Amino acid sequence: MVPLSHYLGLSAILFILGAAGFVFRRNIITVFMCIELMLNAVNLAFMAFSRFLGNLDGQIFVFFVIVVAAAEAAVGLAVIIALHRHRPSLNIEDVDSMKM
Amino acid sequence: MMTLLPVDMMRILPEIILSVFAVLVMLLEPFVRGASKKLLGWLALLGVLAAAGSTVRIWLYPWPGMGTAFGGSVSADEFSFFFINLFLLVAGLVILGSMDYLERNHADHGEFYALTLMGTVGMCFMAASTDLIMIFLGLEISSIATYILAGYRRDDRLSNEAALKYFLLGSFATAFFLYGIAFVYGLTGTTNLLGASTRMGAPGQWTAFAQAGLILMFVGLAFKLSTAPFQIWAPDVYQGAPAPVTAFMSVGPKAAAFSVLIRIFLGSFTSANALSMKILWISAALTMCVGNLGALWQSNVKRLLAYSAIAHAGYVLVGVAAGGSKGISGVMYYLTAYALMNVGAFLLIAYLAGPDEQRVEIKDYHGLATERPAVAACLTVFFLSLAGFPTTAGFLGKFYLFRAAIHSHLVGLTILALLNSAVSVYYYFKIIVAMYMNEDKTECASVTLPWPVRAALGVSVVGIFYLGLAPNDFMGLTLIASTSLFK
Image (cartoon, rainbow over all chains, first blue to last red; front, top):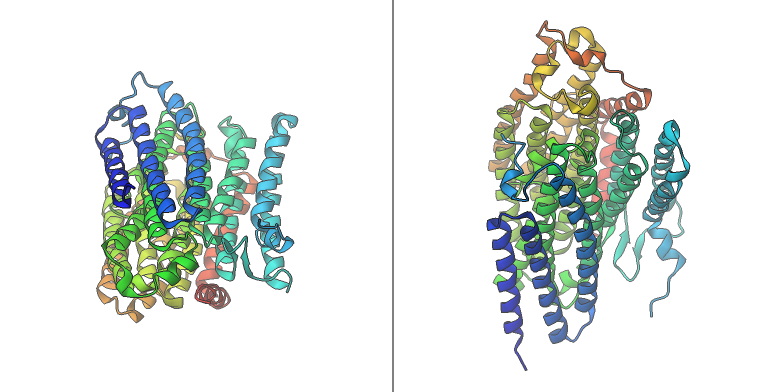
Protein backbone atom coordinates (compact mmCIF):
# COMPACT_ATOMS: atom_id res chain seq x y z
CA MET A 1 0.00 0.00 0.00
CA VAL A 2 1.20 3.52 -0.77
CA PRO A 3 2.07 5.18 2.57
CA LEU A 4 0.23 8.27 3.79
CA SER A 5 3.31 10.47 3.49
CA HIS A 6 3.30 10.05 -0.30
CA TYR A 7 -0.24 11.37 -0.58
CA LEU A 8 0.51 14.24 1.73
CA GLY A 9 3.69 15.04 -0.16
CA LEU A 10 1.80 15.16 -3.46
CA SER A 11 -0.91 17.27 -1.85
CA ALA A 12 1.68 19.71 -0.50
CA ILE A 13 3.42 19.95 -3.88
CA LEU A 14 0.11 20.66 -5.63
CA PHE A 15 -0.82 23.26 -3.01
CA ILE A 16 2.52 25.04 -3.34
CA LEU A 17 2.31 24.94 -7.15
CA GLY A 18 -1.16 26.48 -6.94
CA ALA A 19 -0.02 29.19 -4.54
CA ALA A 20 3.04 29.95 -6.68
CA GLY A 21 0.86 30.13 -9.78
CA PHE A 22 -1.51 32.50 -7.98
CA VAL A 23 1.36 34.86 -7.21
CA PHE A 24 3.30 34.67 -10.50
CA ARG A 25 0.74 34.07 -13.25
CA ARG A 26 -0.67 37.11 -15.04
CA ASN A 27 -3.79 35.83 -16.76
CA ILE A 28 -6.89 36.12 -14.58
CA ILE A 29 -8.34 32.77 -15.71
CA THR A 30 -5.05 31.02 -14.98
CA VAL A 31 -4.93 32.62 -11.54
CA PHE A 32 -8.43 31.37 -10.93
CA MET A 33 -7.45 27.85 -11.99
CA CYS A 34 -4.50 27.98 -9.60
CA ILE A 35 -6.97 28.50 -6.77
CA GLU A 36 -8.91 25.44 -7.95
CA LEU A 37 -5.63 23.50 -7.93
CA MET A 38 -5.06 24.53 -4.30
CA LEU A 39 -8.57 23.41 -3.34
CA ASN A 40 -8.00 20.04 -5.00
CA ALA A 41 -4.71 19.64 -3.19
CA VAL A 42 -6.68 20.10 0.03
CA ASN A 43 -9.24 17.53 -1.17
CA LEU A 44 -6.46 15.03 -1.76
CA ALA A 45 -5.18 15.57 1.78
CA PHE A 46 -8.68 15.06 3.18
CA MET A 47 -9.17 11.87 1.19
CA ALA A 48 -5.80 10.46 2.25
CA PHE A 49 -6.42 11.23 5.92
CA SER A 50 -9.92 9.83 5.71
CA ARG A 51 -8.63 6.56 4.20
CA PHE A 52 -5.85 6.13 6.72
CA LEU A 53 -7.91 7.10 9.75
CA GLY A 54 -10.74 4.84 8.62
CA ASN A 55 -13.23 7.66 9.25
CA LEU A 56 -15.65 9.17 6.76
CA ASP A 57 -15.69 12.80 7.97
CA GLY A 58 -12.92 13.71 5.56
CA GLN A 59 -14.79 12.38 2.56
CA ILE A 60 -17.90 14.33 3.53
CA PHE A 61 -15.73 17.41 3.79
CA VAL A 62 -14.49 16.80 0.24
CA PHE A 63 -18.06 16.87 -1.04
CA PHE A 64 -18.66 20.19 0.66
CA VAL A 65 -15.45 21.60 -0.79
CA ILE A 66 -16.46 20.51 -4.29
CA VAL A 67 -19.91 22.09 -3.94
CA VAL A 68 -18.50 25.34 -2.60
CA ALA A 69 -15.80 25.42 -5.29
CA ALA A 70 -18.52 25.09 -7.94
CA ALA A 71 -20.50 27.95 -6.41
CA GLU A 72 -17.35 30.03 -6.25
CA ALA A 73 -16.54 29.28 -9.87
CA ALA A 74 -20.01 30.43 -10.94
CA VAL A 75 -19.59 33.77 -9.16
CA GLY A 76 -15.94 34.12 -10.12
CA LEU A 77 -16.48 33.63 -13.84
CA ALA A 78 -19.40 36.08 -13.75
CA VAL A 79 -17.15 38.65 -12.08
CA ILE A 80 -14.46 38.07 -14.71
CA ILE A 81 -16.98 38.52 -17.55
CA ALA A 82 -18.29 41.75 -16.04
CA LEU A 83 -14.72 42.97 -15.75
CA HIS A 84 -13.86 41.98 -19.32
CA ARG A 85 -16.68 44.16 -20.67
CA HIS A 86 -14.74 47.27 -19.61
CA ARG A 87 -11.25 46.14 -20.51
CA PRO A 88 -9.73 44.62 -23.62
CA SER A 89 -7.33 42.27 -21.83
CA LEU A 90 -7.46 39.68 -19.08
CA ASN A 91 -3.99 40.53 -17.81
CA ILE A 92 -4.09 41.07 -14.08
CA GLU A 93 -1.64 43.95 -14.31
CA ASP A 94 -4.15 45.98 -16.31
CA VAL A 95 -6.58 45.85 -13.39
CA ASP A 96 -5.01 48.79 -11.62
CA SER A 97 -7.42 51.74 -11.65
CA MET A 98 -6.87 52.22 -7.94
CA LYS A 99 -3.34 53.08 -6.91
CA MET A 100 -1.97 54.75 -3.83
CA MET B 1 -29.17 8.02 10.77
CA MET B 2 -29.56 11.34 12.48
CA THR B 3 -33.13 12.37 13.06
CA LEU B 4 -34.10 16.00 12.83
CA LEU B 5 -35.35 17.24 16.17
CA PRO B 6 -37.44 20.37 16.75
CA VAL B 7 -34.84 21.44 19.31
CA ASP B 8 -32.17 21.45 16.61
CA MET B 9 -34.28 23.60 14.31
CA MET B 10 -35.18 26.01 17.08
CA ARG B 11 -31.54 26.59 17.93
CA ILE B 12 -30.76 27.78 14.42
CA LEU B 13 -34.01 29.73 14.15
CA PRO B 14 -32.35 33.13 13.42
CA GLU B 15 -30.50 31.66 10.43
CA ILE B 16 -33.65 29.91 9.19
CA ILE B 17 -35.69 33.12 9.41
CA LEU B 18 -33.06 35.10 7.53
CA SER B 19 -32.83 32.46 4.78
CA VAL B 20 -36.60 32.35 4.41
CA PHE B 21 -36.80 36.11 4.07
CA ALA B 22 -33.91 36.15 1.58
CA VAL B 23 -35.71 33.65 -0.63
CA LEU B 24 -38.99 35.49 -0.16
CA VAL B 25 -37.42 38.78 -1.30
CA MET B 26 -36.09 37.09 -4.43
CA LEU B 27 -39.43 35.43 -5.17
CA LEU B 28 -41.42 38.64 -4.78
CA GLU B 29 -38.93 40.72 -6.78
CA PRO B 30 -40.56 40.16 -10.21
CA PHE B 31 -44.03 40.99 -8.86
CA VAL B 32 -43.08 44.39 -7.52
CA ARG B 33 -42.80 47.22 -9.99
CA GLY B 34 -40.88 50.48 -10.21
CA ALA B 35 -41.05 52.77 -7.23
CA SER B 36 -42.47 50.14 -4.89
CA LYS B 37 -39.26 48.08 -5.13
CA LYS B 38 -38.30 49.76 -1.88
CA LEU B 39 -40.95 47.62 -0.19
CA LEU B 40 -38.58 44.69 -0.62
CA GLY B 41 -36.11 46.55 1.55
CA TRP B 42 -38.71 46.88 4.29
CA LEU B 43 -39.48 43.17 3.94
CA ALA B 44 -35.78 42.37 4.37
CA LEU B 45 -35.68 44.66 7.40
CA LEU B 46 -38.66 42.80 8.83
CA GLY B 47 -36.68 39.58 8.40
CA VAL B 48 -33.75 41.08 10.31
CA LEU B 49 -36.05 42.16 13.14
CA ALA B 50 -37.76 38.74 13.23
CA ALA B 51 -34.37 37.01 13.45
CA ALA B 52 -33.35 39.33 16.30
CA GLY B 53 -36.64 38.58 18.01
CA SER B 54 -36.03 34.85 17.70
CA THR B 55 -32.67 35.14 19.48
CA VAL B 56 -34.40 36.98 22.33
CA ARG B 57 -37.05 34.25 22.42
CA ILE B 58 -34.44 31.48 22.68
CA TRP B 59 -32.37 33.47 25.20
CA LEU B 60 -35.26 34.13 27.60
CA TYR B 61 -37.36 30.94 27.60
CA PRO B 62 -36.41 27.55 29.05
CA TRP B 63 -37.36 25.70 25.86
CA PRO B 64 -35.36 25.04 23.70
CA GLY B 65 -32.75 26.82 25.80
CA MET B 66 -29.09 27.23 25.05
CA GLY B 67 -27.08 24.27 23.89
CA THR B 68 -25.71 22.50 20.86
CA ALA B 69 -27.65 21.35 17.83
CA PHE B 70 -27.11 18.93 14.95
CA GLY B 71 -24.79 16.58 16.78
CA GLY B 72 -22.64 19.32 18.26
CA SER B 73 -21.88 21.15 15.00
CA VAL B 74 -23.81 24.31 15.89
CA SER B 75 -23.98 25.87 19.32
CA ALA B 76 -26.68 28.26 20.47
CA ASP B 77 -24.93 30.04 23.33
CA GLU B 78 -24.68 33.61 24.57
CA PHE B 79 -21.43 34.08 22.65
CA SER B 80 -22.95 33.21 19.28
CA PHE B 81 -26.17 35.12 20.02
CA PHE B 82 -24.23 38.25 20.84
CA PHE B 83 -22.45 38.09 17.49
CA ILE B 84 -25.64 37.19 15.62
CA ASN B 85 -27.31 40.31 17.00
CA LEU B 86 -24.28 42.37 16.03
CA PHE B 87 -24.52 41.09 12.44
CA LEU B 88 -28.26 41.78 12.43
CA LEU B 89 -27.59 45.34 13.60
CA VAL B 90 -25.13 45.85 10.76
CA ALA B 91 -27.47 44.28 8.19
CA GLY B 92 -30.40 46.37 9.44
CA LEU B 93 -28.47 49.64 9.28
CA VAL B 94 -27.11 48.84 5.83
CA ILE B 95 -30.53 47.91 4.45
CA LEU B 96 -32.04 51.11 5.90
CA GLY B 97 -29.22 53.14 4.40
CA SER B 98 -29.14 51.58 0.95
CA MET B 99 -32.77 51.74 -0.17
CA ASP B 100 -32.51 55.24 -1.58
CA TYR B 101 -28.90 54.74 -2.62
CA LEU B 102 -29.96 51.90 -4.92
CA GLU B 103 -32.78 53.95 -6.35
CA ARG B 104 -30.48 56.87 -7.07
CA ASN B 105 -27.86 54.70 -8.77
CA HIS B 106 -30.50 52.77 -10.78
CA ALA B 107 -29.38 49.46 -9.28
CA ASP B 108 -31.57 46.42 -8.75
CA HIS B 109 -33.20 46.19 -5.35
CA GLY B 110 -34.25 42.60 -4.77
CA GLU B 111 -30.88 40.94 -5.27
CA PHE B 112 -29.16 43.47 -3.03
CA TYR B 113 -31.36 42.77 -0.02
CA ALA B 114 -31.38 39.02 -0.65
CA LEU B 115 -27.58 38.95 -0.86
CA THR B 116 -27.24 41.08 2.26
CA LEU B 117 -29.49 38.66 4.15
CA MET B 118 -27.65 35.63 2.76
CA GLY B 119 -24.30 37.12 3.71
CA THR B 120 -25.69 37.67 7.20
CA VAL B 121 -26.82 34.02 7.37
CA GLY B 122 -23.25 32.95 6.57
CA MET B 123 -21.84 35.22 9.27
CA CYS B 124 -24.35 33.91 11.82
CA PHE B 125 -23.27 30.36 11.06
CA MET B 126 -19.63 31.37 11.43
CA ALA B 127 -20.31 32.70 14.92
CA ALA B 128 -22.52 29.77 15.95
CA SER B 129 -20.58 26.83 14.52
CA THR B 130 -18.51 24.52 16.64
CA ASP B 131 -17.56 22.25 13.79
CA LEU B 132 -14.92 23.14 11.22
CA ILE B 133 -17.14 21.98 8.34
CA MET B 134 -19.89 24.38 9.43
CA ILE B 135 -17.41 27.20 9.99
CA PHE B 136 -16.09 26.67 6.48
CA LEU B 137 -19.61 26.67 5.01
CA GLY B 138 -20.58 29.80 6.93
CA LEU B 139 -17.40 31.53 5.78
CA GLU B 140 -18.16 30.66 2.17
CA ILE B 141 -21.85 31.63 2.32
CA SER B 142 -20.92 35.05 3.63
CA SER B 143 -17.95 35.41 1.27
CA ILE B 144 -19.75 34.49 -1.93
CA ALA B 145 -22.59 36.90 -1.12
CA THR B 146 -20.14 39.73 -0.45
CA TYR B 147 -18.12 39.01 -3.64
CA ILE B 148 -21.27 39.71 -5.62
CA LEU B 149 -22.18 42.76 -3.51
CA ALA B 150 -18.71 44.25 -4.02
CA GLY B 151 -19.30 44.23 -7.78
CA TYR B 152 -22.88 45.37 -7.47
CA ARG B 153 -22.46 48.43 -9.69
CA ARG B 154 -21.77 46.32 -12.74
CA ASP B 155 -21.14 49.19 -15.13
CA ASP B 156 -18.57 50.81 -12.91
CA ARG B 157 -14.88 50.05 -13.53
CA LEU B 158 -13.87 50.39 -9.89
CA SER B 159 -16.70 48.22 -8.61
CA ASN B 160 -15.74 45.42 -11.04
CA GLU B 161 -12.17 45.67 -10.01
CA ALA B 162 -13.10 45.52 -6.33
CA ALA B 163 -15.18 42.40 -6.90
CA LEU B 164 -12.36 40.67 -8.78
CA LYS B 165 -9.72 41.46 -6.17
CA TYR B 166 -11.98 40.49 -3.31
CA PHE B 167 -12.95 37.27 -5.05
CA LEU B 168 -9.43 36.16 -6.01
CA LEU B 169 -7.83 36.94 -2.67
CA GLY B 170 -10.82 35.66 -0.74
CA SER B 171 -10.78 32.26 -2.43
CA PHE B 172 -6.99 32.14 -2.10
CA ALA B 173 -7.44 32.65 1.65
CA THR B 174 -10.15 29.98 1.80
CA ALA B 175 -7.72 27.45 0.38
CA PHE B 176 -5.29 28.21 3.24
CA PHE B 177 -8.03 27.92 5.84
CA LEU B 178 -9.10 24.57 4.36
CA TYR B 179 -5.56 23.23 4.28
CA GLY B 180 -5.25 24.10 7.96
CA ILE B 181 -8.50 22.24 8.68
CA ALA B 182 -7.14 19.22 6.76
CA PHE B 183 -4.09 19.18 9.05
CA VAL B 184 -6.23 19.37 12.18
CA TYR B 185 -8.50 16.63 10.85
CA GLY B 186 -5.52 14.44 10.02
CA LEU B 187 -4.14 14.78 13.53
CA THR B 188 -7.35 14.35 15.49
CA GLY B 189 -9.65 12.38 13.18
CA THR B 190 -12.50 14.81 13.76
CA THR B 191 -13.61 18.20 12.52
CA ASN B 192 -15.55 18.96 15.69
CA LEU B 193 -13.82 21.71 17.64
CA LEU B 194 -14.62 20.20 21.02
CA GLY B 195 -13.41 16.75 19.99
CA ALA B 196 -10.32 18.10 18.27
CA SER B 197 -9.33 20.31 21.19
CA THR B 198 -9.77 17.45 23.69
CA ARG B 199 -7.46 15.31 21.61
CA MET B 200 -4.90 18.10 21.38
CA GLY B 201 -5.16 18.77 25.11
CA ALA B 202 -1.48 18.88 26.07
CA PRO B 203 0.95 21.58 24.89
CA GLY B 204 3.44 18.84 24.01
CA GLN B 205 1.12 17.55 21.28
CA TRP B 206 1.67 20.64 19.17
CA THR B 207 4.32 19.24 16.86
CA ALA B 208 5.61 21.17 13.85
CA PHE B 209 2.84 19.60 11.76
CA ALA B 210 0.10 20.64 14.18
CA GLN B 211 1.54 24.14 14.45
CA ALA B 212 1.59 24.40 10.65
CA GLY B 213 -2.11 23.54 10.62
CA LEU B 214 -2.91 26.22 13.15
CA ILE B 215 -0.84 28.82 11.29
CA LEU B 216 -2.54 27.94 8.00
CA MET B 217 -5.96 28.43 9.62
CA PHE B 218 -4.83 31.77 11.00
CA VAL B 219 -3.60 32.89 7.57
CA GLY B 220 -6.96 32.01 6.06
CA LEU B 221 -8.80 34.03 8.70
CA ALA B 222 -6.26 36.86 8.57
CA PHE B 223 -7.28 37.62 4.98
CA LYS B 224 -10.89 38.05 6.11
CA LEU B 225 -9.79 40.13 9.09
CA SER B 226 -7.58 42.21 6.76
CA THR B 227 -4.67 42.01 9.18
CA ALA B 228 -1.12 42.65 8.01
CA PRO B 229 0.56 41.22 5.99
CA PHE B 230 -2.67 39.92 4.44
CA GLN B 231 -4.41 43.29 4.16
CA ILE B 232 -3.28 44.18 0.60
CA TRP B 233 -6.73 43.70 -0.90
CA ALA B 234 -8.63 45.83 1.60
CA PRO B 235 -7.90 49.41 0.40
CA ASP B 236 -8.72 48.64 -3.24
CA VAL B 237 -11.84 46.64 -2.42
CA TYR B 238 -13.22 49.13 0.11
CA GLN B 239 -12.58 52.01 -2.28
CA GLY B 240 -14.08 50.34 -5.33
CA ALA B 241 -17.15 48.69 -3.82
CA PRO B 242 -20.39 50.71 -3.50
CA ALA B 243 -20.23 52.65 -0.21
CA PRO B 244 -23.15 50.86 1.55
CA VAL B 245 -21.54 47.53 0.64
CA THR B 246 -18.25 48.76 2.06
CA ALA B 247 -20.15 49.63 5.23
CA PHE B 248 -21.45 46.06 5.32
CA MET B 249 -18.25 44.20 4.56
CA SER B 250 -15.86 46.35 6.53
CA VAL B 251 -17.75 45.32 9.68
CA GLY B 252 -19.80 42.15 9.16
CA PRO B 253 -17.37 39.57 7.73
CA LYS B 254 -14.61 41.06 9.86
CA ALA B 255 -16.57 40.62 13.10
CA ALA B 256 -17.57 37.12 11.97
CA ALA B 257 -13.94 36.20 11.33
CA PHE B 258 -13.07 37.55 14.79
CA SER B 259 -15.73 35.33 16.34
CA VAL B 260 -14.23 32.31 14.57
CA LEU B 261 -10.72 33.36 15.60
CA ILE B 262 -11.80 33.63 19.23
CA ARG B 263 -13.64 30.31 19.14
CA ILE B 264 -10.72 28.43 17.57
CA PHE B 265 -7.74 30.08 19.26
CA LEU B 266 -9.11 31.08 22.67
CA GLY B 267 -12.10 28.77 23.09
CA SER B 268 -10.80 25.49 21.69
CA PHE B 269 -7.08 25.06 21.10
CA THR B 270 -6.02 26.57 24.42
CA SER B 271 -3.14 24.14 24.72
CA ALA B 272 -1.41 25.87 21.80
CA ASN B 273 -1.42 29.12 23.76
CA ALA B 274 2.32 29.79 23.42
CA LEU B 275 2.15 29.68 19.63
CA SER B 276 -1.11 31.59 19.22
CA MET B 277 0.16 34.35 21.51
CA LYS B 278 3.18 34.83 19.29
CA ILE B 279 1.09 34.91 16.10
CA LEU B 280 -1.47 37.32 17.57
CA TRP B 281 1.19 39.64 19.01
CA ILE B 282 3.09 39.99 15.74
CA SER B 283 -0.08 40.29 13.70
CA ALA B 284 -1.61 42.94 15.98
CA ALA B 285 1.56 45.05 16.02
CA LEU B 286 2.03 44.89 12.24
CA THR B 287 -1.64 45.54 11.46
CA MET B 288 -1.90 48.67 13.62
CA CYS B 289 1.25 50.19 12.14
CA VAL B 290 0.45 49.34 8.50
CA GLY B 291 -3.13 50.62 8.80
CA ASN B 292 -2.30 53.91 10.48
CA LEU B 293 0.78 54.72 8.41
CA GLY B 294 -1.08 53.88 5.21
CA ALA B 295 -4.01 56.13 6.13
CA LEU B 296 -1.79 59.18 6.63
CA TRP B 297 -1.21 59.72 2.90
CA GLN B 298 -4.73 59.15 1.59
CA SER B 299 -6.81 61.86 -0.06
CA ASN B 300 -9.77 59.61 -0.94
CA VAL B 301 -12.13 59.33 2.03
CA LYS B 302 -13.18 55.73 1.28
CA ARG B 303 -9.57 54.63 0.92
CA LEU B 304 -8.64 56.49 4.10
CA LEU B 305 -11.38 54.69 6.01
CA ALA B 306 -10.21 51.40 4.48
CA TYR B 307 -6.78 51.90 6.04
CA SER B 308 -8.44 52.98 9.27
CA ALA B 309 -10.47 49.74 9.17
CA ILE B 310 -7.19 47.81 8.96
CA ALA B 311 -5.86 49.72 11.96
CA HIS B 312 -9.03 48.98 13.94
CA ALA B 313 -8.63 45.25 13.18
CA GLY B 314 -5.20 45.63 14.77
CA TYR B 315 -6.66 47.17 17.96
CA VAL B 316 -9.17 44.33 18.21
CA LEU B 317 -6.35 41.81 17.78
CA VAL B 318 -4.71 43.37 20.86
CA GLY B 319 -7.85 42.38 22.77
CA VAL B 320 -7.81 38.87 21.29
CA ALA B 321 -4.14 38.53 22.28
CA ALA B 322 -5.08 39.60 25.81
CA GLY B 323 -7.58 36.72 25.91
CA GLY B 324 -9.62 35.63 28.91
CA SER B 325 -13.18 36.75 29.47
CA LYS B 326 -11.97 40.36 29.98
CA GLY B 327 -10.19 40.46 26.64
CA ILE B 328 -13.03 38.82 24.79
CA SER B 329 -15.69 41.06 26.31
CA GLY B 330 -13.52 44.03 25.33
CA VAL B 331 -13.38 42.70 21.79
CA MET B 332 -17.16 42.35 21.71
CA TYR B 333 -17.70 45.86 23.03
CA TYR B 334 -15.20 47.30 20.56
CA LEU B 335 -16.67 45.46 17.58
CA THR B 336 -20.13 46.83 18.43
CA ALA B 337 -18.77 50.36 18.75
CA TYR B 338 -16.82 49.90 15.53
CA ALA B 339 -19.95 48.63 13.76
CA LEU B 340 -21.92 51.74 14.77
CA MET B 341 -19.27 54.28 13.83
CA ASN B 342 -17.99 52.63 10.66
CA VAL B 343 -21.40 51.80 9.18
CA GLY B 344 -22.58 55.32 10.05
CA ALA B 345 -19.58 56.95 8.42
CA PHE B 346 -19.79 54.89 5.23
CA LEU B 347 -23.55 55.42 4.88
CA LEU B 348 -23.10 59.17 5.15
CA ILE B 349 -20.22 59.07 2.68
CA ALA B 350 -22.44 57.10 0.28
CA TYR B 351 -24.92 59.98 0.21
CA LEU B 352 -22.40 62.82 0.15
CA ALA B 353 -20.71 61.13 -2.82
CA GLY B 354 -23.70 61.86 -5.04
CA PRO B 355 -24.71 59.95 -8.19
CA ASP B 356 -22.12 57.36 -9.30
CA GLU B 357 -20.01 58.22 -6.25
CA GLN B 358 -18.32 61.25 -7.80
CA ARG B 359 -17.37 63.12 -4.63
CA VAL B 360 -15.21 60.97 -2.38
CA GLU B 361 -12.08 63.14 -2.07
CA ILE B 362 -11.34 65.08 1.12
CA LYS B 363 -11.36 68.34 -0.85
CA ASP B 364 -14.98 67.71 -1.80
CA TYR B 365 -15.88 68.17 1.87
CA HIS B 366 -14.40 71.69 2.10
CA GLY B 367 -16.86 74.02 3.76
CA LEU B 368 -19.46 71.36 4.47
CA ALA B 369 -19.97 72.65 8.01
CA THR B 370 -21.15 76.11 6.93
CA GLU B 371 -23.70 74.79 4.46
CA ARG B 372 -24.87 71.58 6.14
CA PRO B 373 -23.95 71.89 9.84
CA ALA B 374 -26.01 68.88 10.94
CA VAL B 375 -24.44 66.57 8.38
CA ALA B 376 -20.96 67.78 9.25
CA ALA B 377 -21.65 67.34 12.98
CA CYS B 378 -22.86 63.79 12.37
CA LEU B 379 -19.75 62.90 10.38
CA THR B 380 -17.62 64.54 13.05
CA VAL B 381 -19.16 62.31 15.73
CA PHE B 382 -18.25 59.22 13.71
CA PHE B 383 -14.68 60.39 13.15
CA LEU B 384 -14.20 61.44 16.78
CA SER B 385 -15.43 58.04 17.89
CA LEU B 386 -13.12 56.31 15.40
CA ALA B 387 -10.25 58.40 16.74
CA GLY B 388 -11.18 57.35 20.27
CA PHE B 389 -12.37 60.60 21.81
CA PRO B 390 -13.75 60.51 25.39
CA THR B 391 -17.58 60.33 25.79
CA THR B 392 -17.78 58.29 22.57
CA ALA B 393 -17.96 54.50 22.28
CA GLY B 394 -14.61 54.43 20.46
CA PHE B 395 -12.84 55.76 23.55
CA LEU B 396 -14.28 53.25 26.01
CA GLY B 397 -13.77 50.45 23.49
CA LYS B 398 -10.07 51.21 23.28
CA PHE B 399 -9.96 51.60 27.07
CA TYR B 400 -11.44 48.13 27.65
CA LEU B 401 -9.16 46.53 25.06
CA PHE B 402 -5.98 48.11 26.35
CA ARG B 403 -6.90 47.51 30.00
CA ALA B 404 -7.35 43.81 29.25
CA ALA B 405 -4.00 43.82 27.46
CA ILE B 406 -2.27 45.40 30.48
CA HIS B 407 -3.87 42.81 32.77
CA SER B 408 -2.40 40.11 30.54
CA HIS B 409 1.05 41.78 30.79
CA LEU B 410 1.14 42.85 27.14
CA VAL B 411 2.75 46.19 28.03
CA GLY B 412 4.78 46.55 24.85
CA LEU B 413 1.78 45.91 22.64
CA THR B 414 -0.37 48.35 24.63
CA ILE B 415 2.19 51.14 24.29
CA LEU B 416 2.37 50.49 20.55
CA ALA B 417 -1.42 50.60 20.35
CA LEU B 418 -1.58 53.90 22.25
CA LEU B 419 1.04 55.46 19.98
CA ASN B 420 -0.93 54.26 16.99
CA SER B 421 -4.17 55.78 18.30
CA ALA B 422 -2.35 59.08 18.68
CA VAL B 423 -1.19 58.91 15.06
CA SER B 424 -4.71 58.08 13.89
CA VAL B 425 -6.04 61.36 15.31
CA TYR B 426 -4.12 63.19 12.56
CA TYR B 427 -5.94 61.71 9.59
CA TYR B 428 -9.40 61.79 11.15
CA PHE B 429 -8.90 65.45 11.96
CA LYS B 430 -7.71 66.11 8.42
CA ILE B 431 -11.31 65.51 7.31
CA ILE B 432 -12.86 67.40 10.24
CA VAL B 433 -10.60 70.39 9.54
CA ALA B 434 -11.55 70.25 5.85
CA MET B 435 -15.22 70.46 6.81
CA TYR B 436 -14.97 73.22 9.41
CA MET B 437 -12.04 75.45 8.50
CA ASN B 438 -12.72 76.16 4.86
CA GLU B 439 -14.91 78.79 3.25
CA ASP B 440 -15.19 77.03 -0.12
CA LYS B 441 -18.54 76.13 -1.58
CA THR B 442 -19.09 72.40 -1.59
CA GLU B 443 -21.18 70.48 -4.08
CA CYS B 444 -22.00 68.03 -1.31
CA ALA B 445 -24.35 70.63 0.17
CA SER B 446 -27.01 69.75 -2.40
CA VAL B 447 -27.52 66.19 -1.18
CA THR B 448 -30.82 65.15 0.32
CA LEU B 449 -30.83 62.65 3.12
CA PRO B 450 -34.02 60.56 2.97
CA TRP B 451 -35.55 59.69 6.31
CA PRO B 452 -34.56 55.98 6.40
CA VAL B 453 -30.94 57.11 6.14
CA ARG B 454 -31.52 59.69 8.85
CA ALA B 455 -32.96 56.92 11.00
CA ALA B 456 -29.91 54.71 10.42
CA LEU B 457 -27.55 57.60 11.20
CA GLY B 458 -29.61 58.48 14.26
CA VAL B 459 -29.33 54.92 15.58
CA SER B 460 -25.57 55.03 15.04
CA VAL B 461 -25.07 58.39 16.77
CA VAL B 462 -27.32 57.53 19.70
CA GLY B 463 -25.64 54.14 19.99
CA ILE B 464 -22.18 55.71 20.03
CA PHE B 465 -23.11 58.05 22.87
CA TYR B 466 -25.10 55.41 24.74
CA LEU B 467 -22.16 53.00 24.70
CA GLY B 468 -19.77 55.83 25.47
CA LEU B 469 -21.66 57.31 28.43
CA ALA B 470 -23.60 54.42 29.99
CA PRO B 471 -21.63 51.29 29.13
CA ASN B 472 -22.32 49.23 32.28
CA ASP B 473 -25.38 47.29 31.13
CA PHE B 474 -23.83 46.53 27.80
CA MET B 475 -20.53 45.56 29.37
CA GLY B 476 -22.41 43.13 31.63
CA LEU B 477 -23.95 41.56 28.54
CA THR B 478 -20.57 41.12 26.85
CA LEU B 479 -19.18 39.53 30.03
CA ILE B 480 -22.03 36.98 30.11
CA ALA B 481 -21.45 36.28 26.43
CA SER B 482 -17.69 35.88 26.77
CA THR B 483 -17.85 33.58 29.81
CA SER B 484 -20.29 31.29 27.96
CA LEU B 485 -17.42 30.48 25.60
CA PHE B 486 -15.46 28.71 28.36
CA LYS B 487 -18.33 26.62 29.72
